[in-house]
Image (cartoon, rainbow, N blue to C red; front, top):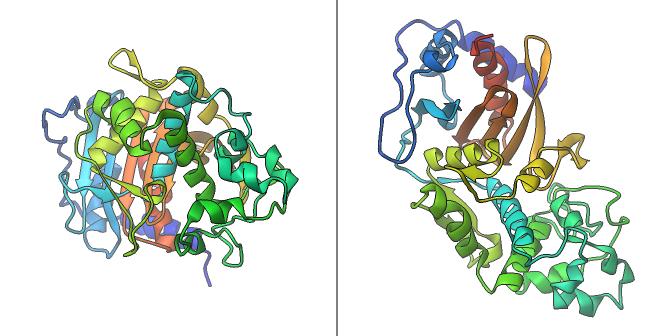
Length: 360
């Protein structure tokens, strides 16, 4: 069997041989605070994109959208499989990266003193469980941000007691998390743990008296002109607020990328501390061999044989917010390739179409 990434690269290699039917058009000006520009005016050649989109039209795929912002201007916007610019999309774990930004804001406001604060300071349930498991007093906010709490919580291991699907079946998810055993020294190893991010959302609520979703709208979304947001979950069960995911239009997702690219500033106003953007821009740990920061991934791409780093928010199914500071570029992908290697197709598109199209 061919390796998934090899299949993807072969797939893209075939795509770029497509016939010329699609012709590039700049995005539509909608009055949503986005400046629009021609791709070539911002140093992005369109030949490979035209071949790619021509061939893509003849293929079955699960991408929903692809947007590119270059030099602060929206230069490309394409939708597929019945999606359009007005439809909100399930961002899945991109929501975790938004919660990270809210933690940075909470620290700036003095609601959270430090990432090195023990979580038991903010979560009474954990104070109660520390007598039974003293190692829990060592778990800090930093450990939740880097998914290195040491608790038996691994979404990618169905045997893990804190695995995400098991968590949703509990009557009280917080009690369940507080009852998990510490099986690794906090800070020693990182495993993907949605429950830890739910704890962060609860801490945000405890320190402010505000639902984390209201904080997101007040401190992030409204200031950058995002006004069409919903929250939900694919489960038919009633989900706690801490487990709910963002549903957002791709243009608005790109605004979050532009905010990160500009060190937390929007139109001259500092919304997220620049020091926090710096923190999420550097590797803190690794999860399954991939660099990870404070709920943001550090993913390596390649241009002309040279490594190009991106700060990334990702979600199951092909939801990607990719920020390339070196090239003043933001790319957004959404899709429906849930629990499938097809959700990695955007990585190949970045390497084989987007980055090679940048002018020297």
